[in-house]
Image (cartoon, rainbow, N blue to C red; front, top):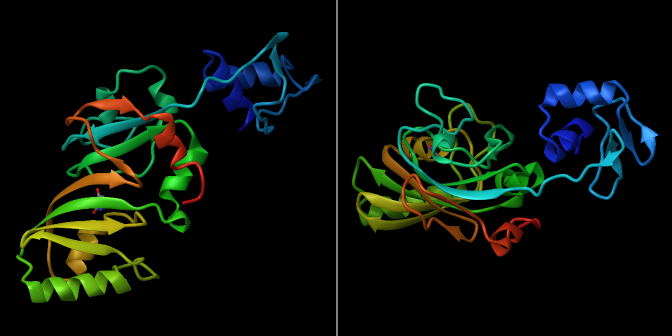
Length: 235
Ligand code: URA
């Protein structure tokens, strides 16, 4: 990680204060004064600030049940940020691994570990996400079969160069389905149903990889080590 980030993650300094200390020659990496805040450092490097060795805090991995009318952003916009429900420190260091729309509810993973969230969001890693979708128009068994086939082959979304990756449709009732995706294009579920002449009227994410939503709306918990590890290797 960058040296300024490492200094922030191992002290209470804000980014600007960390950069100021580094530029002023107060920080050494492996016994050499380093004034460039963009220098890459690793956990096993010896980083000293004013002669004291720094140790970065552990990364945090959090599961949250997002409520409707909150947004997946660190700041309030048209709706309040979902981080208001998260009573932990240094919230500004956290980000969301795969955001949901304001009107979508369900499972959100939150972390300060960028490599880990990349494993979840990069389409190349094929991490599955399961959505429960309420539909405007009933799926008869014939239409359901046709839609399932189209989603399996990939559909063309407006403004996209490539077809969507293969997705799996499971019918729960004529107006409720489970859709499993391995990518996360902007408004993807809503646009996929629009592309087949239907409309998603409710949307809820139930699962990411092997992790199922198991807390009440607005609640959160830390992930277990096994859950964290389940995303640590390419899937
Ligand atoms: N697809 C959407 O359309 N919206 C979401 O929030 C998530 C997936």
